[in-house]
Image 1 (spheres, helix red, strand yellow):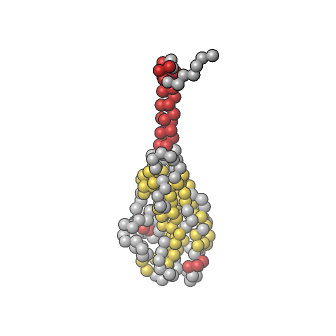
Image 2 (cartoon, rainbow, N blue to C red):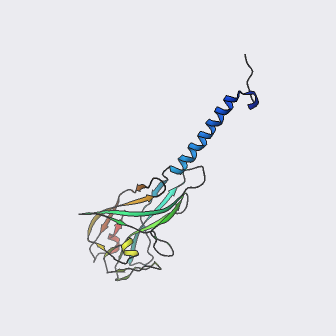
Image 3 (cartoon, rainbow, N blue to C red):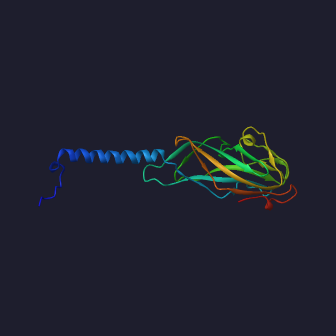
Length: 203
């Protein structure tokens, strides 16, 4: 019966080379997986991002859940869009809300606080949309006004009429084979323009 070998010097050279190749292949596979894997994107519950009593501004939080034991993944240059479906279906580019105003691209980092995507606002009093230092689109009283790219940056606002709609976000993840991650479906209820904001919901 042969004695066990505890030191590399006791091993034949071909076994040492084979072990080195196996270790290298394992490390390379883990690194490739971490680079190419699609991060776990979380789309949260809609939040009202307005402070005024007369204004409801629905926004959806987006974050990257921590899932790697390696260095925290940074998903850069993310763009976001939404599909609105009622009687017709429309896909619109969106923006990210920041303290410096709306931006078209955003970096997401695993474990960081969510970033918010403004969806739609409704004010019972006519006026400009407050709470944004750079873009203040005008909102007619009681109108459900989309706060997408056109409305927030180009100031070309559009409104949704009374009814029920579904909304789905689409996150483009560049550098990950340009993957698109879709959110769950949200249900938007738009009341008549004379109704209070309590009937203006996004769930």
